[in-house]
Each structure stands twice: as C-alpha cells, then as structure tokens.
Image (cartoon, rainbow, N blue to C red; front, side):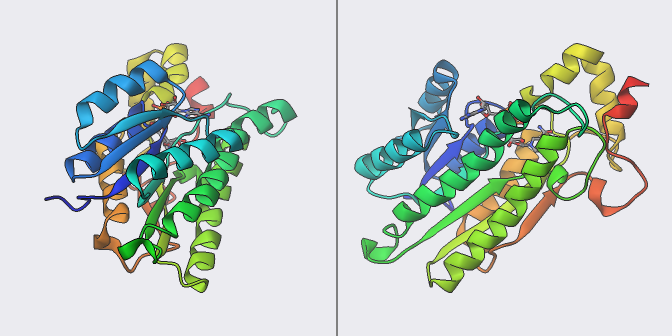
Length: 271
Ligand SMILES: NC(=O)c1ccc[n+]([C@@H]2O[C@H](COP(=O)([O-])OP(=O)(O)OC[C@H]3O[C@@H](n4cnc5c(N)ncnc54)[C@H](O)[C@@H]3O)[C@@H](O)[C@H]2O)c1
C-alpha cells in the first residue's frame, strides 16, 4: 500500500522529463496515473509500464475542448480525479523584452499559463465529487512553476512572466477553494535547472557538456538537479502527508534562490 493507493492522478506533460518521472513516482505509491500529453507514442509506451490501470489520453493543455473531454473521460473510466499535476510546459525561444514578438509571447503562455488555468478550472469540477461517498470534495493540485517564477533573470521574458503567473494563480485558487470549503489544496513547485529534454536547444547550441557544466555552476550546490528531485516534492504535495498545506510553494533548486551569490541567467553562456 502506498500513499496514493486508490487515487487517480492526471499528470500533464507526462511523456518526458519531470512529468515522466512524476508518473513513475506516483504510480509506485499506488496511484492510477493518467498521462496527458501531445506525444502519443512516447506516452502510450510509458503508460504500459506504470501499472495500477494507468493509461494515456491525448491532451493539448492549451485547448479548452480537450481539457473538457479528458476530464470527462477520466471521470467516466475511473469515477474520480484526486490529483492533478499541471506540469506541461515549453521553454520558448530565449527572447528578452526587446526582441520577444507578441506571437512568441502568446505561444509560450498558451501552454505555460492558459494550460494551468484550464487544468485547475476543469479538475476542480471533478474533484468536487471525489471525496468520501462522492458527496464531498477532495483533491490536490500541484502546479509546476520554476525558479523563474520567483526571481527574474535577463533573457526568457515570456517564460519568466508565465511562471510568475502560475505561482500567484496557484495561491489565488488555493484561497478560493479554502473559502468555499472545498477540501482541494493547490500548491506550486519551483525547480532549478533539471536535466531534461526542455534544455535540448541549449545543449544543441553550446554542446551538451559545456551547457550542463555551466547551468550546474549557476547553482550553489554546483550541479543540476534530476527529475526525481522534483517528483519527490510533487509526491509529498499530492499525498495526505501535506494535508495542511495549500497556497504554498516548494523550491527545489540547489540553493539558487536562497542567496544572491550566483546569477542564474543564460546571457553569460554566450560569453
Ligand atoms: N528542466 C528544467 O530545468 C525546469 C526548470 C524549471 C521548471 N521546469 C518546468 O517543468 C515542467 C516540465 O518540463 P521538463 O523539464 O520535464 O521538460 P520536457 O520538455 O522534458 O517535458 C515537457 C512535456 O510537456 C509536454 N508538452 C509540451 N507542450 C504541451 C501541450 N501543449 N500540451 C500537453 N503537453 C505538452 C511535452 O510533450 C513534454 O512531454 C515545465 O513546466 C517546465 O517549465 C523545468
């Protein structure tokens, strides 16, 4: 028996990186995991390895219609939704305020911000009927922001703005759920540099070893994190072990945001 036995968890962006490791971690604790992603083959293959009746549903998080049908399908198949991990995200081009186009701003934030908003909106409707006897609400929503949602850095303007929005959106929705008496908690997680495919454009441009060493050196612990480091924080927030936490944030960043000694920005990589 794990911490999430008999629970149903939807993980967006579950095909790759932090999301894939989160799917494995939640499934190890007994959850039926639903992977929501746009990478069909990779997601189907992962779902087969998870056990507990886990499965994949195609979900573009920027699409309101797809959110509606995915949540309906989960409730139809499982009768409930207990956990939502809003993890899907894209890095976007490393644009600053002067060279970021409106199109790029919209493209990044359609996934990173609208996706989280829509996820919370439709998951809460299902979680309101997921408590004991289904007449009560129960649920945990974990939104993956970033250290970019806490401190600014020269460079990724649209990404930083979006991750900041996710941080405060989480707190606002947490307050609303508490106010309404729903037993639905909403928290955010803020990773530092984690070795996942989201950094591949950087790896391609500068060479993998150089980029990894540089990103690692921006952390006081002098290394990058692993997807499991983030998945463990998600598991804690998803489970009853964090039952008195809502509107909180967990920073998992090797110390980046704890001090001002090291600058976390990609501009220096060019030098
Ligand atoms: N890796 C890092 O250093 C880091 C640091 C801070 C925050 N994050 C955040 O962690 C989250 C996971 O990123 P990752 O590093 O694992 O990257 P990743 O590229 O490995 O995974 C992202 C996943 O999101 C999916 N995705 C992209 N657009 C989607 C859409 N429209 N609908 C559904 N799924 C979509 C991708 O297919 C992929 O499976 C993101 O929100 C990212 O911003 C990552």
